[in-house]
Length: 215
Picture (spheres, rainbow, N blue to C red):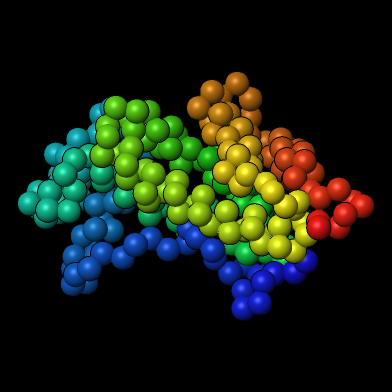
């Protein structure tokens, strides 16, 4: 029931690294400055009032440099979101697959109660009509995390924590869908008790019957 051979507890599975930008140190510094500036302006003014010109003026990075990397404001915000979230909401291996799932859900929900949740709401709204942002969201945020969680669930099946024959896509939707729902339709808080209850009920539902030991 323990973690897989070769995988240490708390070892990141996904989410703690942001794809590096090729180039000289000066290019990397400019990238970091632009992303932080975008986050600062979002905090101050919101997505609707954010413009490329404001980012240029606040960051001091040349407009040509910014446009060479990002075609529009949405792409900058997407990169800023990924860079910020990567360090605070990773999926990391725990002793069991069950604990990996629980910890990931708690960490993600806690993160959404900060400014990052507001940013995610704005990005999801924009992605409904911005095809480039929608694609970037899938390829760079949703898909990597779903792939990582799929492997966690497969490990749980292999160790007998979860029953065989599960549709893992549906399981992932069941685990994380309610979190996104409360983020987008904020009728109730993403409290620790809610997340723990959600995880407990879902994980109990995919556990093998006691009499067959997962076989």
